[in-house]
Image (cartoon, rainbow, N blue to C red; front, side, top):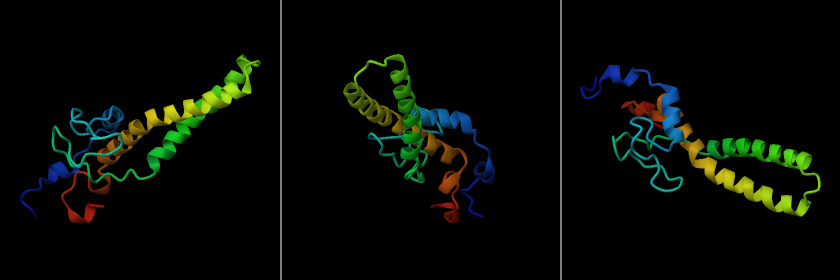
Length: 138
């Protein structure tokens, strides 16, 4: 057994909901103070405040899928509502407004969803988060 590793710390439970909320705020899931990104969607390797390793994250393609799912529901609901409430509104104006609204909504949601997904992985110790064992990494 490696003397640096505290077995109690490796297997202690992490609260999922507080971590998700911190991730949605684009903050470190461990301390809630350091920023998780150093650019728009570029995840820092380590938290600038507490030093928690964040390079384990494997968000990959899931954040765009979830973002499009959420944004699609709002946009389609908006289109249907607009057609119902404003039947005389010109179609060309809607064909300009709704794609722009969808793009802006996706750009706003994407870092929030990715932060939540990274925090979820951290809370559940997925992909090597919270373990010093090499077989748990990756």
